Structure formats: structure tokens, C-alpha cells
Amino acid sequence: MGVISSEAFFLTKKGEATEAFELRKFELALPVGAEILVEVESFGLNYADVMARQGLYREAPPFPCVVGYEVVGKITHVGPDADQSRLGKRVVAFCRFGGYAKHVVTNDYAAVVVGDQSSESLLGLCTQAVTAFYMAEYLTPIHKVDTVLIHAAAGGVGTMLIQLAKLKGARVIAKVGGQEKEALVKKLGADIVVNYNSSDYAEQIEQALNGERIDISYNPIAGSTFKKDFALLGSGGRLVLFGGAELSGGKWGLFSKLNFIRKMGLIIPIGLMMRSKNVLGVNLLKIADNKPKVLAFCLQNVVDLYTEGKIQPQLGCVYEAAQLAEAHAALESGKTTGKLAVNW
Image (tube, rainbow, N blue to C red; front, side, top):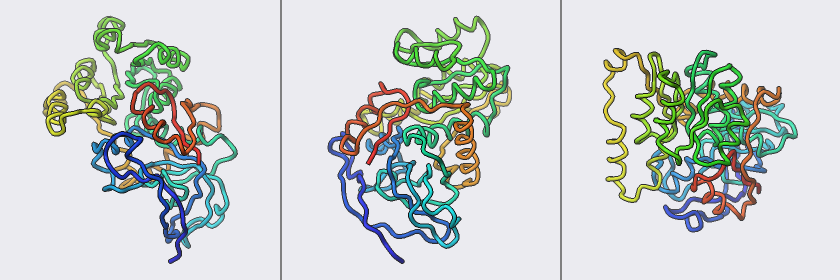
């Protein structure tokens, strides 16, 4: 089996971004079976990367490791069982970690051939858009009659959820934390905007809906927001949990985690049935591991929607490789909007 020499940003320890990453050379085995090797031009950042750096993401490999789920680049090697015609083609691709590298080996099904679109736009179609599409189209489709609450609505997943919901004609409530973000979500079509820094967001929503309830909540925060969202749900409502951002930054280790769980309370299945409410959990990494065809289906669909001009990834900021720590700190601050990308 052959190998190639490459470089990657290794996550070596918990801590601040300026200290946790180290650029190292390493050797990577050439693809086998249906694998492909991508020479990376850009990679994307996701909040799960921040949680891995904080030691809060249990799915992450042990230190030292290379995190990152998505890349744009050129296929330079293909395994014997992969589609040989894709050699030399530019792709946007998922990877099972390893994205913060100059070369990545991934599965053939996890890549979609693309044109000369900007790498940062394409990266916005990967983890964020696929997560949004999976939740809004595959797991529990949005309907025209639905009222949808979107937390972190100015972020990568949130901006995609707004667009997908508006394509269906649904009413969108966008929850954000600043005036600049308010302007962005309004531009994307949000019908109601709540700023959680102004007053309690649940009270704002109840006032705006005047007795009506929401049908779907897309919630990457969890913690104290769970009970509030559950109370806002009407009959047939769906609370979709796809993150635990409220846990991020907890300073008390196990006590912070226990408090996080306490705030969410206890759900009894028979109670869900009696009240006709639903709680759905989404971990895209598990979908990638156990339902790869679903992941491939969602990725192809979002690329098609983008090509047709029906969705547009919101770009945050593009950083050079030497600015990785700065990019991580920006993402961790919660003040960014859209997709953050890093160019080699």
C-alpha cells in the first residue's frame, strides 16, 4: 500500500485555539476499495470542532487528532472500486474527521463533482446545508401550514433552514442575538425575528403568535431552551435537537454537564403520545456512519438546489491557514454569521 506526505493542523490538547493546534507533517495511505484521495484547497469550520477543542465532543478521536468534516478540492487518486472517471475532478466532499489537512481520504459516495464555484460557497453546502436538508426534507418535512422556530438562525444551518422553509411556504420565526443578524434573517425571508438579548425569547414568541403554537423547533442549543421550546409546541409539534451549544464553555466539568441535563428535565414517552408532541435527535456523524446513502442523497440534493439557484449559502469569513486560531476564536464567540472557511 502506497503513502503520500501531507500536512495538517493537529488538535493536540484542550484549550484556547492559539495553543491547541499544531501544524504537522504526516503520511497518509493511498485509497483502497471505493475510497478517493482529495487534494484539499479549502476546508470548513463547524461548531463541533470548537467542542472537540474544548474536550466536550465525545465522538472526536483522541488527541492528537485532525478534526474537520468537509473539504473542497481535486481527486488525485481513486481506489480500485471507486468511479475511475472522477479522477482529476473537483469535488465537495465529507470526511470522517481529517478535514484540516492538505490531503484527505474519504469514500466515493461522500463526494459530489462540482464546477468552478467558490470553495467557501461549496463548503456551506456540506455539513450545514446537508444537516438542514436532512432535518427539513428527509427526517420530518416542513409543510406550508407549519410555523417553524429556528435557533441560531443567522448561522450556517440556520440560514439554510430559513431558505428551505420559505421554499415550502412556511412561516419562519428566526431567533438571533444581534441587530446585524436580525437584518440578515429578514433578508432571507424570516417572518418573525426575536432577539434573545432583548428579553426572554419564549415570551416574545408567545406574544407574536397571540395564542398559536409552533409546529417545529430546530434547536442546536438544548439545555434551558429545551423546556421553553417544548412548551411552545402545539399538537403534532416536533422539537428537533441537533446540538448542545449551551454546554460549551461550561467551567465546572461534570457539574456543568449535570446542570445542563437537569435544565432539560425528564421526558416520559407515554407523555409524548398523550400530548402528541415529538422530540427528534440528529447527529449527522451517526447518519454518515450508519446511513451513508442518506448522506449522499442529501449532499447531491443540496448541490442541485444550489446549482438551480434555489438556495444560497451565506458566507461568513474566509481565512488563510495561518489564521486558523483566529477563525476558531471567531466561531466560538457566537458573533459570526454564515460559513467560515479556511484556504490552504
